[in-house]
Amino acid sequence: MLLTVSTTHQPATDLGYLLHKNPARLQTEELSFGKAYVFYPDASVNLCTAALLVEIDPVALVRGRGPAGEGGQLEQYVNDRPYAANSFLSVAMGRIFSTAMSGRSKDRPELAETAIPLTAHLPVIAARGGEDLVKRLFEPLGYSIEMQGSQLDEKFPEWGASPYVALTIAGTVRLQDLLTHLYVLIPVLDNEKHYWVANDEIEKLLKRGEGWLGTHPEKDLIVSRYLKRQRSLAREALSRLMAEDTASDEAGDAPSVESPVTARTPSLHDQRLQTVLSVIRDTGAKRVVDLGCGEGKLLKLLLSEKQFETILGMDVSWRTLETAKERLRLDELPERQRSRIDLIQGSLTYRDQRLNGFEAAAIVEVIEHLDAPRLATFERIVFEFARPTHVVLTTPNADYNTVFETLLAGEFRHGDHRFEWKRSEFEGWASGVAERFGYGVRFEPVGPVDAERGAPTQMAVFTQKEVAA
Image (cartoon, rainbow, N blue to C red; front, side, top):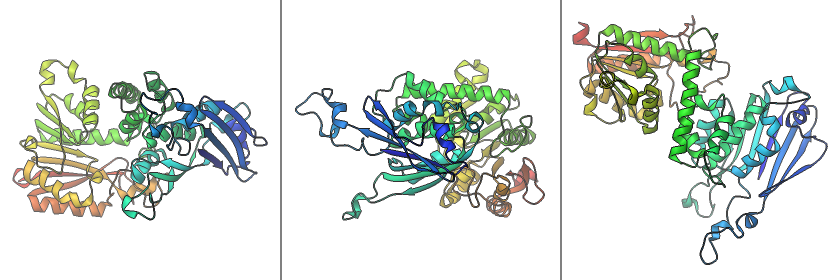
């Protein structure tokens, strides 16, 4: 299996100092499962490429350790482990590039802390989840992606696409970050590991995921796959990530792609939640539902307000609801507080009587995750059947995206977004919904307002016409 890392930073041969591997010679390292080689196909001032080749002996791996039975299992000897990038490659990276992954460079300490143009190429990797999963894993980390797939067998097209792809990711990042991202995400894409996973694997994951995993939108999936879907280990890892996230929240959020502001200014996410809370509070509502509640940050704010006597959080993800339960510490709340709030699993594309009878509903950054053909169903579920008195709905403002330097033209803020509306598109949609279902609607900006582009988040506040009158 092969991994190449290239840079055009000049002088490009500084890559050798960062990796602690001399471009002028081939380097070999013995591993428990084979050999690793590091060499440089290109080493010039303008372009430098380092290659890590891992040579595996699959027969030696299983000899004498196969399962009982006549001849063992054929799949032990005939498999993709020597060829497709997988956890063997991650282990080799941790061994060969340990100093680079720690961010240390004796000869180029300042460069080790500098984001430089880097490209990583994996000629063969099993992307079990397809192109969509690859994008969801790497795009939130700032990488551009190129993939080349193929059919399982061109003579039998009905067999479908092969899970194996050639993958290239590119971005301007620190070398340390690129290597740690690959170290974690290669086995996640493969959805398998060649060794037994125990508690010490949590420590590896948290160490290599420090600074990025806790805020990654796919952290649940990453943790589950990295820990071989062992629920107890995944719960512990997510709990520790949540604790770190909570501590970060209390210390003050750092600037993000959506928040190019100083550390003293609340993040856009916090501004959004506080604005929604304020609007719901002003309606005088006592019964509130958060549709698409996620990990419960808005629910936590609602619970702190005595005005709200009944609070319901609904999300489609059971795992996310478990995280919300832990974040809210529901099991530790006094009975009187605990009786005010409940969490349920559900979808906004199915009618649900549990959503009836609420005076206010919050739908914060949810609709952009729905496929456009499902919007009509969503509209009926919320505005015709559940029919809360007030609906507070937010979504990204696509007009504002040009402010974010890290977003390419036409790129969405999140890999799972199905669309992002300009202000005119959002106002047209919301006005049509209000007219069809007997609501009035007003629009408000959330976040810093640009004179030409508006605010990063746009909000619509719907109120039933008979109440508004």
